[in-house]
Image (tube, rainbow over all chains, first blue to last red; front, side, top):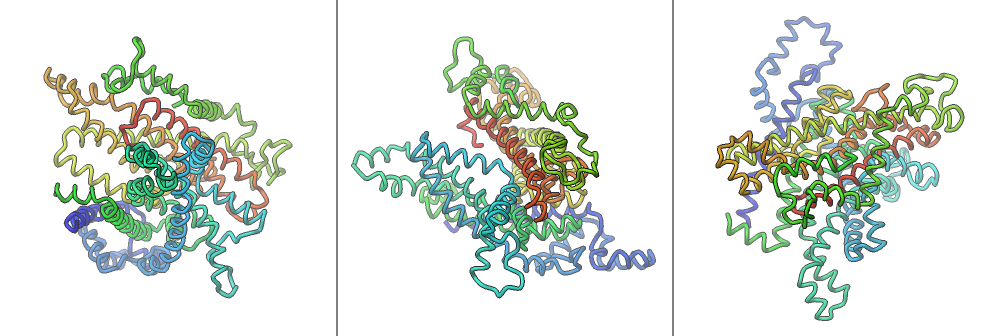
Length: 325
Length: 309
């Protein structure tokens, strides 16, 4: 088991390096460089070419890309991600200040996704070809096909403008004394919209997995024994159906991040996605590279976690893999 | 994409893979059978009809739109629907209906061009990895894993921030970064085809790798590839819309659905001029829904339960 996990960890390290190489290659084509990031281009334009060449040499910018990559990587390993072209502040610092907001949003959305998606998937599978199944699968299809930002704008229009029920921007009311209720009410719409997309995906997978399991012979056996339908579905079918759903968890994080980028933008949620979009609009790729790096690590870790959960939940995987390795 | 026939046709030239598990009538080719099954899928046919209408409206945009999408009418700023402008005008007096019609051109061209590009790249790399295996396979698959570990929206934002936003860069960036799915699919298909007897036969009569892959294997992979590409078009349209919405995609004044929603983001416009953003929003949703329904129909029609899509 530990052996298997260690091997998975070792495999994911080259992938992480790959992410940094792709990101760095993109960056090396970008206009501007760390010098313009540290010094205002307006001031820079007044300096002599010799002075600029000297500064560039100091920063190692006259060296070939592979050397710069190695130096940059050494910095990253020490937690130094460089400076933002726009704010002239260290990127690591800016990222750290944005992460909590994003975690809060994604955590809440994930919770909503789980609480809505899995039960709906189970109901839909149990009532296959019924009216409820058609309604739920159609709703899922509509949710998946509608852009997050459009859903968000509709939600703002309905709940914020027409009904005046919920706040539609930011994490808290400006100037108001901080309170839990206020923060929660700000979280409802963004987390709801982001969670809806999650729920749709989770429902699809849960439904498919449940349908698969409900066809199995041991379910027929359970029925023949005279167990109640609820026991069969919850204790016998769902427990096995959830095993493949766990792997979906690893796939869910990239979706969540992409959704968060858009959702944070609509609801002015001051997280990492909001920052990423602003960085892109300001042509600040080094900042974006920091975001890509953090997300890459997050995705690899969540895949690893999903693998662990998978092998804990399903002994067949654990023993099968150990024998083969 | 409105018709399953042409896409599935090459299958009959290639071999018997798709007729394998299906009861084939005496003179029914697999392609015709798939087409008939597609026609029985009611939602897929609805999607096909809707998409055909949307494609026609985009192709004949000058006839469908009754105003020029770029002309600014200073006497008719922010006009509500009705009157001279069917769906109203935007903040600077341009006709919303015409912009939605022309915006369809943007969405569809991104969907079709970007997906064609990555389907080509993905199939090429996937075929190489699957056919040759070994180190080449390892390298290509690790590269695929790497690209897949970053959400495509974020990766595309990073690249767009380097090359600058425009319609071309959206198409090229989605096209160059979107191939991992196609690559994985192709690799799996080629791997299983490699064991088929008709491939051994082809090899025995002295066919080279290029001929085997292109003439004997490729036709058998077109079914699943078409399904993947169909869902890919829906994804690409959503991606372009999201990018343009974020202001990182198609730039004004070129009309695009996502861009129209971008212009309507401010809370006053959002609350007082719903016609400005609801029309393009529903246009995206309906188009993507139509494409997804077609994808579902195609998947069921060519019986792809064995392929994980």
